[in-house]
Image (cartoon, one colour):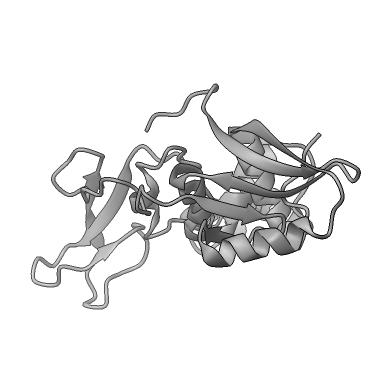
Length: 222
């Protein structure tokens, strides 16, 4: 789905009023799929996405990313290694393309085929040689809609299930176990209020960032 600056998800949240703390949130599958897509994102992509959209750093990783970014390419065996480190590929990214929010945002996926037609080896990068000794000479561009692009409709999860997201980022279906967890959590607080909020791209990236630096308090309410 194409990105939009107004794109957002509606979440039902439970807030502990005295602590002004989000206890948990409830969502349909579309928002959960975006959270699950964090798993398909290389760490450098996570750093790049969050540093471009949000203030602050992801611990030392931001410094490491900047070190590669500012490194003189004369120190590299091949200058293209810099782009590989800063913009790594994921084999799973192509399956996240049709989610409600594509965080990586690739418009096309280039692959390189071994010059030896009998070998049939494909690489994400045009660097080095195939195991047969031939170069990765031929580029194969896979764009959404092409015959090479996998047709995966309906996202990653079944549309009939709703989910609960805990403050420590544990996700579970709204079922018996989730209900028991909900009752346990509610018992810790006095006044609990239900609210509906909207989560946009920047808020999703903030959740990604906080998940990398904190064991809790991923869901905040102001």
